[in-house]
Length: 138
Image (cartoon, rainbow, N blue to C red; front, side, top):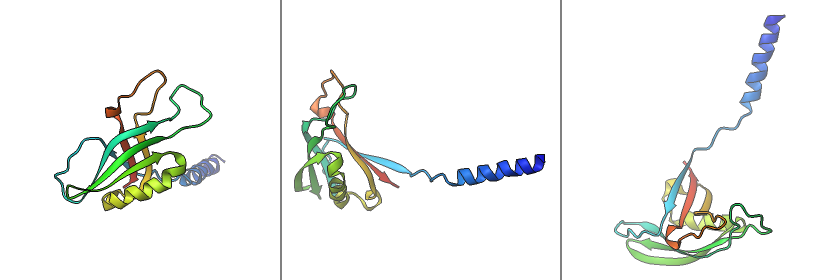
């Protein structure tokens, strides 16, 4: 009886834990306002935050809000395009497609994109402290 109960528990645990999905290996790339244009190939530079209407932490809002930012692309130190992007849930797929055109091949499986730091109630964020963080599947 003990052996059959032990066998049942081992079998149950094996089946229960076999259903767990494997954890994705997500890496991040940070795009800052720093210009380093001596490299060859594409480079993405975060120019500025135009608008940040996201709901601050610690506040209850009706609308989650969005952040708008100007992002520039350079190729071989020459400006290719300036793009004013809106970062919100409804624009996520459009933003992923745009960034994947200019990121290296190994970083094109984009999982998420966000503008940081996230606003907090009562704290004013200096515009120079903003950056874009892109999470991609390795």
